[in-house]
Length: 388
Image (cartoon, rainbow, N blue to C red):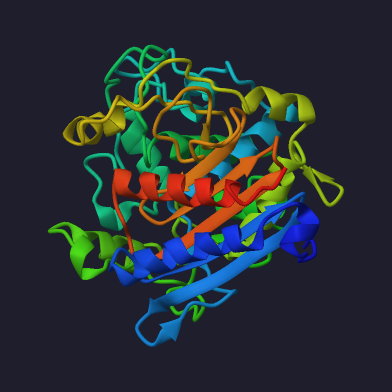
């Protein structure tokens, strides 16, 4: 782990950094969520970190809390898929059906690994494919069998719909199917990602009795009719054995920072090369062109916003790109800034031009575009602290 330095020594304004924490504390006070861990770094050195509020009743937030990362988990899975490509196990244009037998039915035969990574493989939005229930979300082989039976909802490569729990779970199964050692998904991630990067507090799935596990929660104002079912799935079904490559990684803020350092280093951190610089640079780009992320169209229309450009990279998240738009990177972020977002609760951003990293993990779900708008605000406030 890199050292903690004074903001001024890293070219950042201390008072401006404090506004990040103040904004998060304001959200806590307004009942939007309960607590959070924040880390901001420049040049790999930490300039600001804060824990605020609580993560459960009578439990103040702590530096070593293990948060459910939600779809930030996709960045971990994507990194291992790219590593497998670097090792020659398959390519970006390899058809999914060559790696997952049975996937080709109902219009999906053309879908490729790259299209799974950028959410253009013809799959619908969905956390659990029918006929499975929430109680079966952690059964990776069973989930893949159900995904195989789904019909394509569009011709692969022609549209972009964020797939939530479908596309990246297939990518996790691809890692299993092509692993020469015959390991399961959780073991692959442990051996090939978490151990080499020193992420000792990270895992896919977590024991329900882990005292550092942060339970998923909703504040009263964010509670919906679906809340009980969501709480059951995340707090009971996501146990130590559940395998959800798209969304059930648990990490501390420091472990997330260890991972983002590997991305900031173009695939390498602490002497360990996770992804080649060539493939990292290629994956860092916008791989969806001008396509709109149709999974959020209903909410952008309801809010009177412009359609949200997808801007998906192959790294499990987004690139800022150019133009004025809603972007989780922050409107003031550099065009090549990248982000990963966990639904309703988490996010990280790396701005390579300014060499700034921001990590936000929160307790208390804030669903939909509200969370994306919150991340945009946090990242803009962090970037406002840069003096040069």
